Image (cartoon, rainbow, N blue to C red; front, side, top):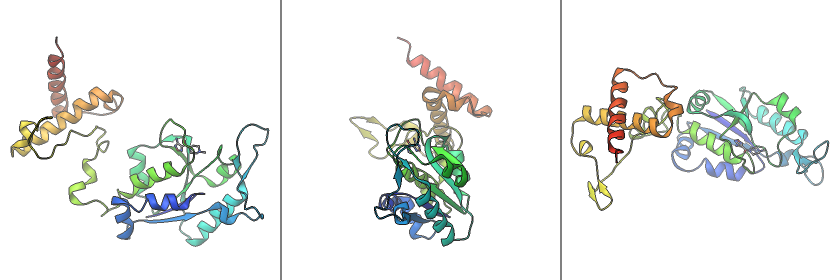
Length: 250
Ligand code: 4HQ
């Protein structure tokens, strides 16, 4: 897939997308990231991209014209239609479900705001969807764009090794991940759970599912209430609950 990013900090966004699994996806030709700097499209002598907010108030607002021209250049570079996303705290929360849907699109474009944000008229005319990576305030949309590129890039077919298969990720089934261990089996910090030391793969699968269910129950009950649990999962969660509550009796 192709991801175009409109940003005042193109080197930062490109560097974020060059490391690890996502960098490898780019080198494998599974993902193309292109950047467009609105400053390159400003026409005045000072290459101005921002203006004072109409009606007064603090800070600056990104002006329409450099963004409109940058987006036009982006569209001209490739005629394939792009799904345009504006990153902001006013957007719908980015979830793994939304990430998976975006990962299946042939082309998305990410608009990164700085200052107080972007002129609302540009957003109304150019943006298809507004997304937030969480309820906190960043100094610009670049980190949010980098988060989205990372989450979407790693889902490109062939980006992950077999061992990293995305089908076992947290949230893919609506549950948190189970605990993970590596050698040594025995350490001053504790032992690897006995079931993981043996080769009973059915028992290991059940243990991991039980831990996922239990951790989701303890840490993210909001997620668990969205899940439909089959009979096995309900039984494993009951078991976890009983053991957990018994272990807490004084
Ligand atoms: N910002 N999720 C304000 C964010 C943000 C977020 C990006 C700060 C846009 C104008 N973006 N600018 N949270 O805090 O996506």
